[in-house]
Length: 77
Image 1 (tube, rainbow, N blue to C red):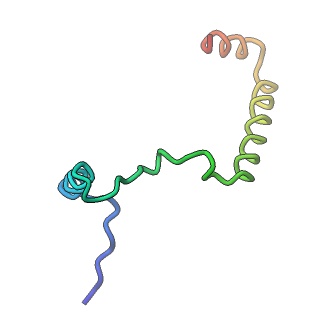
Image 2: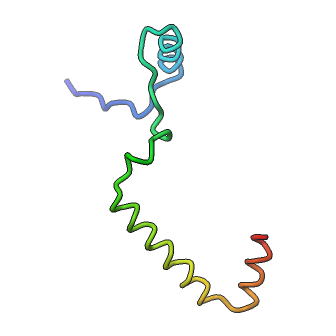
């Protein structure tokens, strides 16, 4: 007998049942992954990402012509 793959997402009925249980206090509330706190991020990865972002803006600005920079600034304002 083959094993089934686990579902990637729960269906609507499962989500509704879980929400009802949370509302009635029968189950602890779940926190969506999008509501992670800042302290859960890897500080080294954050540091590397920030460093790359700082370099990228300057490199892009250096490649643009004065007209392109002006257009970009006008759209941003």
